[in-house]
Length: 186
Image (cartoon, rainbow, N blue to C red; front, side, top):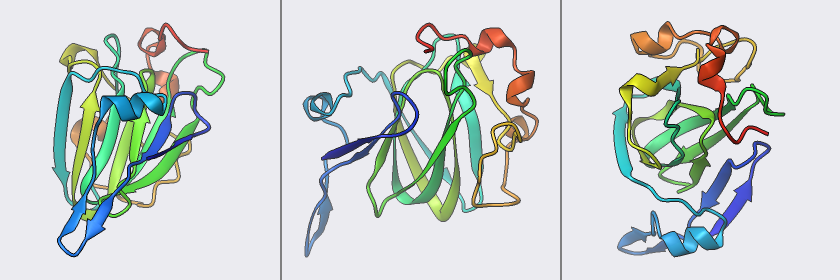
């Protein structure tokens, strides 16, 4: 396995070893010892799987209080995955990172607590899997507008398919500052 840091603190890309032969392929999706050796020491308590058609954009979501870290992978299709630092007071507040995750490249992305996350399906349908460090708490669910001009994400779609919640989400500057306070913002 290879692991790479991004420009955002704690956001990491993992490239698991994939073993292929005439029958197909095999990879470990999660092994606590292996990931610990690559700097990811956490406990996951919930796994989620979503299926979306091409052009669906989900996000930008985060949870606070009770923030979640997420280890993300795509098991079918491809997505453009985006992480935004929403930690008020952080040096990288409002900065985003995007990467392509697909069944073909087998990359995984770790999104730590304090970051909003979203993705758009670029090759569908896509099966999107993520492990979470805390349970889902509907009362803590937060959303930042996907096309916030202050953030300036360069999405690979112009007219995505959105949920009502995502289409009506506030811009980062309109968010309640308490929702953007995390204990470890640097």
